[in-house]
Image 1 (cartoon, rainbow, N blue to C red):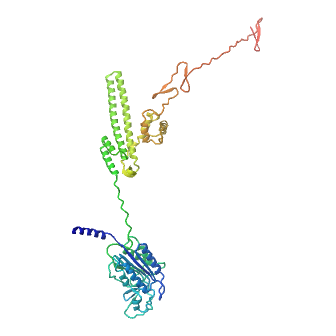
Image 2 (image 1 turned 30 degrees about the vertical axis):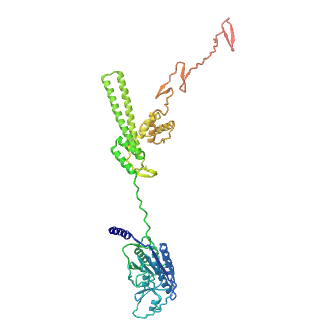
Image 3 (image 1 turned 135 degrees about the vertical axis):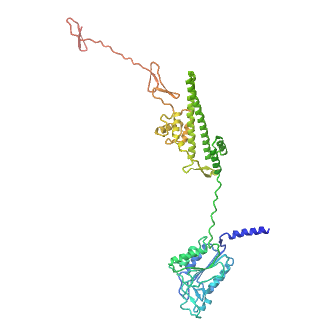
Length: 542
């Protein structure tokens, strides 16, 4: 049992110390002193303290106490009250903007009512930095004091020295915090002064507001970035400085946002069908394709498997028809050589012709199935990706096999051949989809009540034409001929009938002409003693 308890404790410790240390409770005291009574007023501490306070509040600090223009007693009371908030805190920060002074190696922050006529008055009228550090000492993870108070000391000119050996230096003095996990940040390094700047906030505070609230940014890096910003904005005249040390774990004033949940790739349900298809394609027999189709009744790879199976059947039929046609032709040649009977030779010739027709049909069917396989593969798209339907309509991306451009190029010729078979094509048959071929497909659309795009020789159109067992488009014969099955026969009319413009035999109608016979008289010279008479104004003699 003790071993189990030790193991559990070790696991808990690993979980606790193996992750970044983010504060659980964060508290801050912010003081800005501008309205000094004995020296000139400072311009920026009020706006600086407001900016820092707003930064901590927006960062989600549990306690942010903001105080302005505190007198010495008010400052002591504020520090005492704040110490109660620090007791259970993980991070505690005190920010002070105003005047600071260093006397004989001790740093003080100055309340607004301080007079400081003598150097020893600082013991009563100012607050030592050690007091601020003592207030935040109970914080567990981070103790931070930020002093934007390294300005010129206005009390130095009038302050009396009670002891000649007691020094009053420029700026603040270097410090070495005694407590662990404690940092003291100066706006300017020891012995130098800080600038108020030309804006609403001092350069140091403006940089702190920019970097301290960055989520997940370690406080040491944030203060380091602030240092670089101040050096750049003051042309290297002011260098902020940090005293103290922290441990090795990163410590951010604002915790980093929780990382988004790792998107786990769902199991690809198409992986199994793709794997089985590739295996079936490697074997490539009809029973294997039948088994694949039975296991996967629908989907892209199922359609492809059906096309592969039909292709195998067409290849087998083509081989069998070729062998049968060759055997029939050999039989025909044998009978011719041996001088067989005319009836036997005629029968052999008919069988050879029928076998050749079957062979041609099988070859065409094989080409159609090859084109179908190619078309199914082309459906995957230009990048050779296909999408197979999953349950619920979800799609899985699968890799499609390579397509066969040569097989696809046979579709125009095959479609023209089938259009001729159903009586819709009277033009040439080749691999070019010409205007004549388009008119043939348009004629098929009209008679078969379909609506295929005549500009494209598609596999769907080929399947539709192939599915028609008999003629679709009517046989058109020239004038004087009539359709008889698949042939045009000359029309013959019986005696007394003739062919009219409608290819119909009509009885011949003979129109009788009535010829009026006129007696003609020849005009002759009047003989002597002859008889004469007059007709139609002309005189005649007999």
